[in-house]
Image (tube, rainbow, N blue to C red; front, side, top):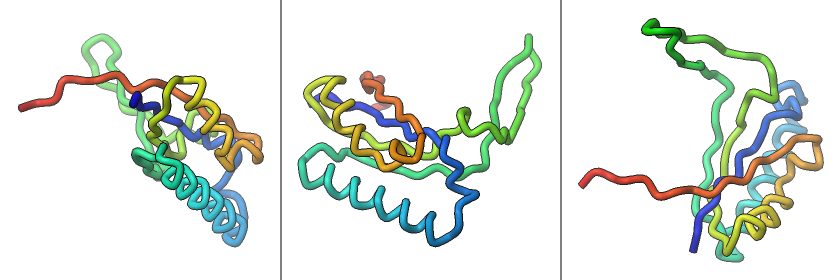
Length: 117
């Protein structure tokens, strides 16, 4: 079955919320993750730390910037799901708890990439 990545955008200032609220939000993600697993769609999940750098070249000189404070630039984590189509994966993404907090999620197909060996 095709795989899709659901990118969780950190638009809802998770790190500024009180610890009890952060834990409650996290537990909603755990419950959503478990429901994806129980329905046979869960193929992976990871959280990402807030620390980050952007690496690019300007001509032949490397430039390393960051961290950036803009929430829309950040990705808080991702789920890999299996679904029949991108539309079916988007329906799964509707369960993301962050949507109710004003965040957006992005759904993208995962394309095969050659692996060594």
